[in-house]
Length: 624
Image (cartoon, rainbow, N blue to C red; front, side, top):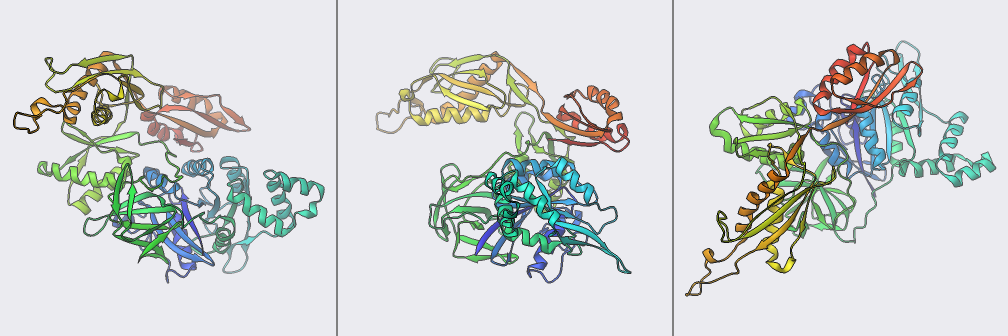
């Protein structure tokens, strides 16, 4: 039995969860098709998801298609929850990107398609809602080719069936025109196919076309397009055949060394931590001791494998499958066993931040604990504790995410909170070099440690580097490790309250007092250096060095793309100048214009609000 870990992705309201429900019904997992509007879908299990009718957390459900076991991951479509999509991409063998036949290619559709292409994830496109008023076919195919990828091919044709009960049907394309179109597309990416086809067009037999289409779809070179309706079931059979025959199964070696990755963490009824993991190699059995994360180890106390719509307890899980593991104090992104070939950082990090305040002052400790647990399930919310102001801050993608966090705190933890107005997350970068040193046993140094540090600017995007400018053997390794860890912790908040980025910290001086004993042979803390001395002294020295270097605050910048009528270019350029955007040379195509450039994150929302009035409602904005 082959296994396929399949992701369903889409712009919000394209019908992604409805398609998931239809696939489960067609596979015999459910007797009735759940409704998003009624809150009866299988994968939207959170009460908040059912109330709002949107997917918030990625959900896993399994079903069989012939000889293929499909582990389907239903991901959120709203851009505020792009972090859930981020984590799912790293464990997929293939994907279905859902597009509305009415709204067409939307901003989030393009963001998702770019990530799928960049990561070479084999993808089928499913154009949903062909039964809706305003649904398009030929024009939408051209739009898909222009905005997503030119290497797409329609596998179906859409026809209107006359009569009293007129409806739209999706029929597989099998005519000669389709064969010639498919052969031309495949020849663009396969030199051997091209050589044979040029020599003799009859070499493009239906069987060879099918084999080559499957091979090139599996390499993410070609993207088949299916048409249908998740609500009526029209065209879904053709999509399931594409899933079975065109998307590659998981490559897995059950006898190899254990290698997996954690992509989701949740809490059980008793508060126990449950890790969702994709296993790339090896086999995990109950009671196995497993290395995970950064040098940690734990015992798998229970294993649950997804099967026919739910998860079932099993004694083991083999490579290629997705499992729920108990007993591991793991975080999202932690490797299990050997480092797996996961893909990370596909989307921009959050650019907004908000302060969370409990309605009852006495709940501050409980709020910190609750937010810590939420951060385990979603590391990108970036919980930050400002000790000087005694405030808790969260990173956000948007205002809807703020509402979801507030509802979660109320429902799961019984905490009512208020949020302050969201602000843009900035970073501090050193403007020069600075150096400071504190010597042991010299005032005002209260610690039994010598620490000297120099901070220098580094290229944008390089992060924080730590180097030794002293001999590694000049003091115990644990003391150097304490300094390095404390450097990273201290730079989480710089001179102006923002995280310090893109710098190199060099340790220039070191010194300690060796372990000493009293006359009675006991360890004397007052005469011996400990790691705590270095953890206490490092922030003081580092901040002195940073003050000497100086810092500048930088706000995040987004790339934007605007599609608009050519006559609206002048007013749009004037508006972009007021928003501090930097546009590139516009590209004109008849009466249409495409404009790309960069814009400060703080101006993105206003740009989206102003664009409709500037373009008569015809402009489309995309930013990332």
